[in-house]
Image (cartoon, chains in turn purple, red):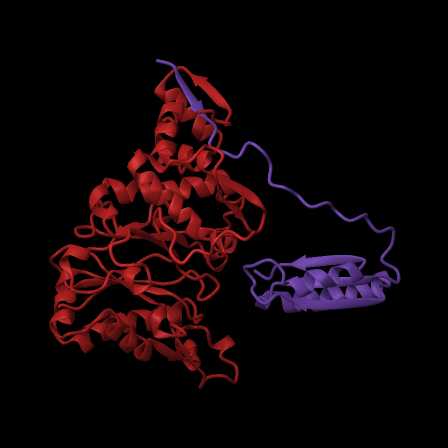
Length: 93
Length: 351
């Protein structure tokens, strides 16, 4: 017996955002951190902040924390991204 | 009826199973072949065209259509009469306050608890008595399974992909319970939560595994409920102090003591809200002293308010058991109740 059965998946990939152009250098740039607020983010971002400034010449690091670590970043954080040259979105698990 | 999904011609029932398993389209168990006839029957039952948009998944913008829900429901074993529950549950899960992406992706590993109320339970043969939280009947088994298969196939909520659960729990195969409305004096859960009397409805909750308890040694409502509250305190101590929706499953034996004492669901919720709370310093007693810090005297209630408690009459007639179903992670996700096939307090279309 032959069965003609249907594909249970959407068949199309989820819509993706476009990556921003890659930076040639971090020298003098502004980098934003988006933390999910979990315990493990504190040490990670503190260390990364130091490395970016001291070893890569990053001019400014902006740290922001989501209000809900299981939800997308808050709108006011997303709005700020336009003013940054790069973003690091980190998990703390 | 014109379906949009890609089709596959397969030679045998075993080949169907291998096709679906090998593509990662199952929960590991065999599936019912989703043929065009079976899927169309589901769509006709709810009077929806295949491309009916059930909702847009809010985080990744995924369109959820009736056709795709129906395919997965058939795979789970649903008959057409089960499909309205699956559709409504998905509408509820896509409400912003449910936070579906977070709840289904989280390492916390919760499942979607589905609670049925109203006449549809009887039409479907959904049992709220023996083995209420287990394999009690066909309807709750296949409806709960359909929710999971839809998550797997429509949102990529596969283990290690979007589903990042550390452990998960058995409710992720199926987690659906019907309230035993015929054998209680209490208001049905949905009516307690604002659905008009007599309407069939679905409540969804991002839920951990049931924590079973027992107290057969008293008839006093306060003592019975103290056992429930203690189990919730244990959850606050051992799992998470985030307040949110908890569900209590109260079977007949304990329920009758509470009802005989004149306790309503609201009375129960009020009592539990007062008793189910801990001091932060208690975390030091269970190995979590590192996060007590200087806030040991802070008090953490299991719920922000009494109405966050979902009291559900269900379970077999004998046995002094009950269960606490804890939230995935407090108020990160809120339980949602929707009536099936009707619109209550809907706003007229905006011109």
